Length: 336
Image 1 (cartoon, helix red, strand yellow):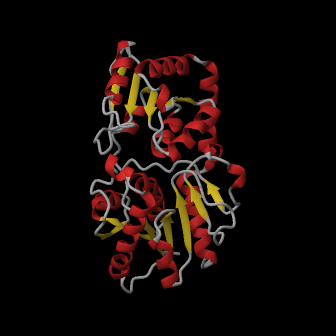
Image 2 (cartoon, helix red, strand yellow):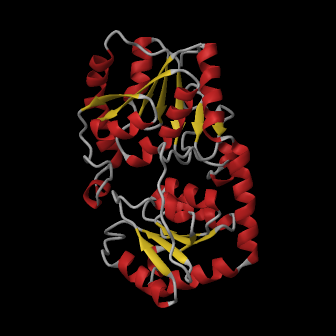
Image 3 (tube, rainbow, N blue to C red):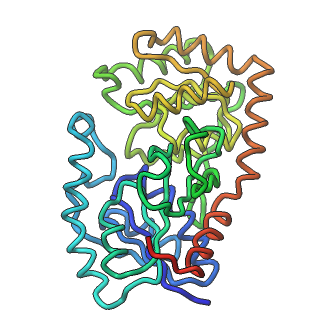
């Protein structure tokens, strides 16, 4: 049965992008899908076949937090965003109320809307689940990670379904051609890493000196990073969930240089699972990254661990599994 399903997310790439694959899957199943976020994501949303419902945001226009924004109290910034979005989204939908809401875990205006409209909802977590079981009503939650990557997974309630990554590349996809003769390293550390603007450049130079063909990416870059990963032998990353999951899906080992709490959690799990190395800020240097890259790409145990992770990702179900849960909640109609 055709239903109106509304996806909602604060306008940050790390939160919107993981939901695009779910939007496309629901559209392909015949549902009418709307997606509430800021206007900057309208074109991407439209590519999935969903209808963008836009509002004026208080967050960075390009959906990529800068160093100054990250230094501010994040919860405060997100709270201000959700307070500003709520009346705008209410007005934008008007009488066209959805049958169900799927919302990012930090998008606090969405549960308020579900209560106002008396419709069921499903939470969507693009990264580690932080909410202890029982802290709020057991809302069905899609977690876009493989279960083994979740920190403290034994404390996560049964209402959470780990579906693995739900990538969205666009209908046309993107191509990138690797040069012949040298292994490819993708370095994606952003700018101002730990207050040191030179870190990505120095790390790239260190790898290049060891014979790597180095491709660098930064926040907001037009570089098709996922297309590069198809040819890469190593990813050097700050540990954002999207990049880590893309690399693992392609079987690419990781050197993780974390900046924030979530990235430290991810880096610790990556190292514990044997699919990469964590380099902490005090150990960060081009030589350390070069050594880690060499060890990971020559270690048979790393390749075995990566193959195990790829198998888990394939078995997790991705966007179809997420859509199955959403349709199940739609059929039950439980309002939380």
